[in-house]
Amino acid sequence: MPIVTGPSYQPPPFLANGHLQTCLPVLIRRLTPVRYEREAIQTPDGELLNLDWAKTGSDSRKLAVLAHGLEGSSRSQYIQGLVHALNRRGWHAVAWNGRGCGGELNRVMRFTHSGSTQDLATVLSHIGSVGQQYDRIALIGFSLGGNLTLKYLGERGAEVDPRIVGAVAFSVPCDLQSSSVELGRRRLNQIYMRSFLKSLHRKIRQLKVQMPGAIDDTGYEQIRSFKQFDDRYTAPIHGFKDAEDYWHQSSSRPFLPKIRVPTLLVNARNDPFLAEPCFPYEEAKASPHFFLEAPASGGHVGFLTFDQQGEYWSERRTAEFLGQLL
Image 1: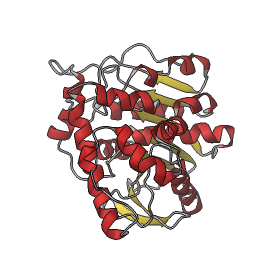
Image 2: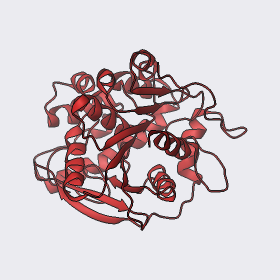
Image 3: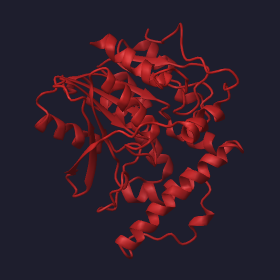
Image 4: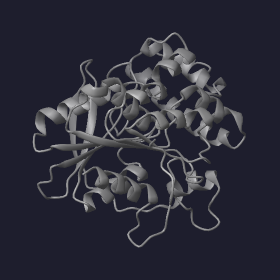
């Protein structure tokens, strides 16, 4: 019954609030930028995905594949912090940027949405074709990228590439409907909602210029929730009936029982993005492969600590879990 108990994340004094833990890393963390080597690959539908590689300089046979959250990129502080931590421990890392992220404009009228595991499959297929040196691969995802990672592993089940030894996911809205409702329910959460919608609007405007007549942003300022955004854009663009259909088909929670490699999900109880259905205790109790850790604190992709190496708890926890697998 892999529900992880015992010592877990403990926030610094006076920083137990979930909103502080969510916002402070973005505002105060300073990292040496990762020196990536960029590679562009093409998807079956003609889009370009940017892969940013960070190697240790050694001929490591271990590779971590990192997926960022909504409106993030390989330059997000939580991605770069984990890349540094894994490189220190002898792992090569590759952070893949979703469609329209990482500085690449969309070529195709599609997004990397919460259920688009075909993009992750394209990345892993490419790595398999050119990265023969890697015999141990770990998948790591944050928020939306975590949902993609969990859903991908559940979809593949026992057919997953045998080189994939395990996975770690943080702050995952594995039940998308409840998470969308939670983000619109509380007044403080409107800060995050407005930020997401503002960033998404920039992409809509870019697409409007790139593909005249294919998309419209008239009245966009009236959108106040993910339901309104997904009803207007995500669902029709990607072939879903409506927002609820998109959430139902794209949530990773129904796929968790089919995961067949050791997988750790860490969702903080004070994460302002997550509602109760995003804590899949029953699935963890019933599975020998899926581990759930739900510390009281951590916020959304937070887990900040102040140690001498500058590593956050989430980075040490990832390295610890992967080390146990190997």
